[in-house]
Image (tube, rainbow, N blue to C red):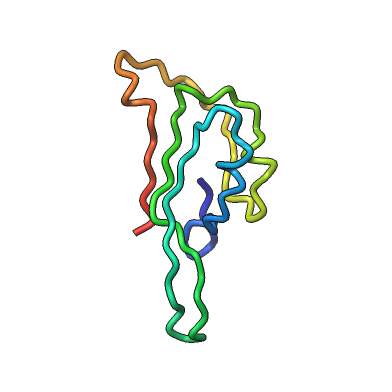
Amino acid sequence: MLRDEAGNNKCTACGLCVTNCPNSTINIESEIITDEETGKKKKVLVKFQYNLGSCMFCMLCVNACPSCAIAFDTTFEHAVYNKAKLTKTMNNK
């Protein structure tokens, strides 16, 4: 998950990555808040969960992301004895 210059998460919780993932590897939780400055409602990311154990690295989530919040890295050695360690969770709050 990439961040902008201010350190904020780039994800807008649109759900396109979840929709395009063939293995249901990605799960997101979002909520709708009211912006105090403008008074408009917007969706914000609460929790992003990624299961590395079921990912087949097809990059459909990366290609579908309109805000370029997801990127793959060449560091991929994630050998573990416990499958629970392959689930990565990022909380936005």
